[in-house]
Length: 255
Image (cartoon, rainbow, N blue to C red):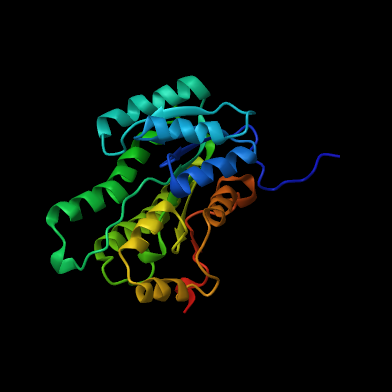
């Protein structure tokens, strides 16, 4: 008897941006264990190759370096992926940047970079991705938002605005694309133990760091916690789920 696995991704072509490190890399590894064929995307080809080498030998896993901010490169890159792997069944948009700074000290260039990287580039990417010669039907789109887009956080004004924008994008696009059998959902993680968080920790006092940790009743998250949620939203197990923002934050926003 075949073992039942509701999160089975076998045979699905899944594209992951930001797959060179952190949550994106962890998600790619998790999807690979569930049988997905991975298109690993990001700017650093060497790091993407390192991610590919971590994946199970089974499956057609390819490295596809491109910059989400280079709008002219998106369509050719997507067509190249389809040519090498076939139509894309699901996408996890994980690339993003953060900056902690009170608004009155934030430079206009920082505002532009955060909004362009975290929000505008996603919208432009999806405009190309929705071409039926690129994305399969049915299809699942997962956006990586943040608990900061749901709750207030000092020094995170612009970052929070960019992630809240993704949540709004998710809801509207889910309604727009339902007739095409394309589901759109978002994930909002709390603080997760990644290299990025490790760098942030170096800038904090022990009291500030402990304050962040204490705000998560279940403690800080692991990348696998986010990966499991993303796998659910990309799998057929979530076939009747669209337009939702799945908060994965150890209770951070429940207080």
